[in-house]
Image (cartoon, rainbow, N blue to C red; front, side):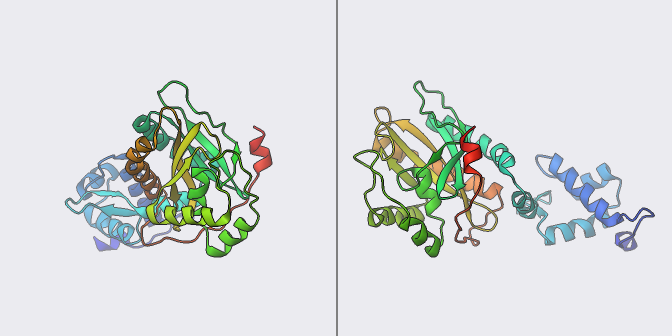
Length: 282
């Protein structure tokens, strides 16, 4: 039976083993609880010995995985790494929005996901919370990074060289009495974000708004975005904010895992450039 696993080329140039591997991945992906070897055999009409060699290879390269307590095959991290490598902004939104809905459900406040846009934070997508008088951040809006939670979360992923270069260009415009006044104060807060994995904005950009955000990393370990929420200061005290640190960090970690991040792959993030003018005008 082992001969079945040999690579064969069909008359039209297609490779049979690759087609079978693709069929296995698609079948496993359709099953929420994964699939056993025998279930795959019945579904795909392949002998278990053939499937064993193919699934063993797919596990070896990270496209499939097996649970620690069962023999069911599930989609592996390698698939998500491939997917995240080709994510465009529309796909990023689709991937992140279920997590924004969950964060909105936990905090009952408006949530948002931001990415780098030149040297500003771009609100890529948002979700409304159930409470009245929501804080609205229009999709496509650019925000300064030194006085917003999403901005500080993005800054926390920069390499030292990029961080220093970026800070040199900041004029530290005072939007409110709480706006950070200089690079030293900002550095102290960004270093704390790096240690704690959470960023705050205590009325620094809008005196009526408090925000919290956590960095989101991709399979390379780079910070590709920030997920967070905003609430009015009269409804959300600093004590209330502290209550949501754990859930915000946890959801950010789930988004990062969705994009293939592993804790041993942290990398410094360059400032990305893009098309701010086009999107901000939407």
